[in-house]
Structures are given as C-alpha cells and as structure tokens.
Amino acid sequence: ALLTDQQPAPKVPTLPDAQTVTFVKHWTDRLFSFRVTRPASLRFRSGEFVMIGLMGDPDPKTGKQKPLLRAYSIASPSWDEELEFYSIKVQDGPLTSKLQHIEVGDQIILRPKPVGTLVHDALLPGKRLWFFATGTGFAPFASLLRDPQTYEDYDEVIITHTCREVGELTYGAELIETIRNDEMLNELIGAENLAKLRYYPTTTREESPKMGRITDLLRDGTVFKDLGIEPINPEADRGMVCGNLAFNIEIKEILEEFGLEEGANSDPKQYVVEKAFVD
Ligand code: A2P
Image (tube, rainbow, N blue to C red; front, side, top):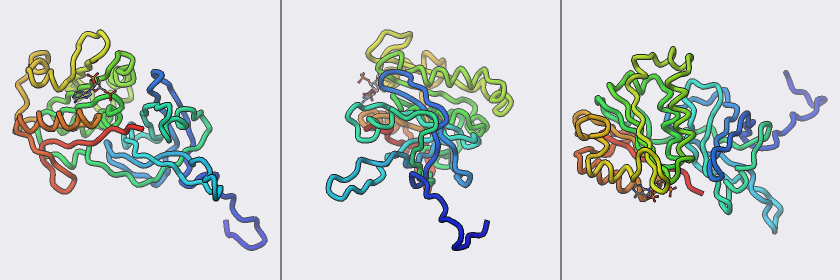
C-alpha cells in the first residue's frame, strides 16, 4: 500500500532481522535444537552458517541495547521452508545462557548472509564423502545429510559423531533414523541413494556400543575394519570436519597423513574444516 503522511508510520519490528521461533526441543541439559521462520529471500547452500542471536542487555551508562550475535550452522537443508539450529547451552555463555530459554512465538535475530566452507563446491569430485563431527559440530551435517546432492555426488556417505555421553548422540541418531524412514525424504533423496549412508557414532566418557575418539579409531584402523572399507586415500575420499578446536586440529593432521589436502570455496580440494560453535 502507498504510504501517505496521513497514515501512521509502519510498526517497527521489535528486533532487526527478526524471525519467529516455531519449535524448540531440549535434548539434554547441555543441548537443544530449535526452528525459526525463514526469510523469503534467504538462499543458502547446505552446510553454511549465519549469524543469529538476541538483543543484549542495556548498556548500564547509555541504556542502549546491541544485538548479541554468534555464528550458527544452519542444520536444515536448503529446500526446507524453515531454518533449524542445534545449540549447546552454556550456563554463563553470553548468548546461550539466554537463547536456551526461547519458546515458540519468541523472536530471534537472524542476519540473512550465509557463508561457510562446509559446502560441496569446496571439494573436488570423489567416491566417498566423510563427515567428521564432535558435539554440536553435527549441525552442518544435519543439513548436508538431507540434501540430495550429497548422495548424487558420491557412492558412499559416512558420518562419524563423537560425543562424551550417549544422550548427546540422540539429536543425530534420531535425524539419521528419520532420513532412513521418512517417506518424504525417501522420495526426495531416493531409497538407493539413502542406502549409501553409513552412521558411525562413538562416545568417550560413557559406555556405548562404540567407544573412543574417532581420531584414535582412524589412526589404528578400527573405523575401516568396522565399516569393511579401504583406508582413506586422496583419490577416493573427501572429508568435511566440524568440531571443537583440538579435534579439528587433530583430524586435519590425520587427513593430511592420508594424503588429503584442505580446500576452500575458491580452491576446491579433498577436505574442508569448520569450528563448531562454542559459547
Ligand atoms: P573426550 O571426552 O576424550 O575429551 P566436547 O564436548 O568437549 O566438545 O567434546 C566432544 C567430543 O570430542 C568428546 O567426546 C571429546 O572426547 C572429543 N574430543 C575432544 N578433543 C578431541 C581431540 N583432540 N580429538 C578427538 N576427539 C576429541
């Protein structure tokens, strides 16, 4: 409608770049996931991240509030009409101490500028695609695992997820279950394509069927024996890595030992790395 000076000014949104929370689920006392509305104009590549957050506390001197934003991987695939995020809760974390209390109908800030290196374009063609995640580093792969391209481009897709405790695997484990059994996803991705998916969860501080850090299990060859496959090699294998800093550094060393080189959007190679959000 045409605005004239007789009409009241348009209502200012409560937050800049506001999006509305549509779903929240708490997985453990340290982990939760949520969904928000997606700006109509937002296009992104599965695996990318955006800055999201809330308004910070008022400045004690000026009373002014500034947005408190952090980089979050988009956990939903690019075809999804909403956006999903998977987050840690840090009791004294500047953002997550507040973000963990959001409820359906609340607003968050979302800057619609997706970026990131965990994208198909940053890898050269290959036969096997590995996703290596620890903790909330599963998030970008939750997006990529629901993207048909992931399966179209590779013969085999292997996702490893290492967490301290069994309960921290649940978000990922349920997502894998859904991908395998959901009719809509089966139709979209194709049953033959979904047969390419292998899931390798491990825990380090609680008893589970597979214990140990994935780094150790790669070094001693346990992973390859368990999956009945050849060790990683630069001709066939491609990798995407997302976890805590120490893990990322160690996995990089291991992949380099196997002969893989780190790629980027502008220079695709054999593997790419991104730090999982911590705060
Ligand atoms: P661990 O329990 O042996 O430290 P966090 O919750 O601290 O981010 O850790 C998530 C998972 O990543 C844990 O299972 C942890 O194992 C594992 N991890 C931490 N550092 C490394 C590393 N350098 N290499 C492999 N796994 C790691």
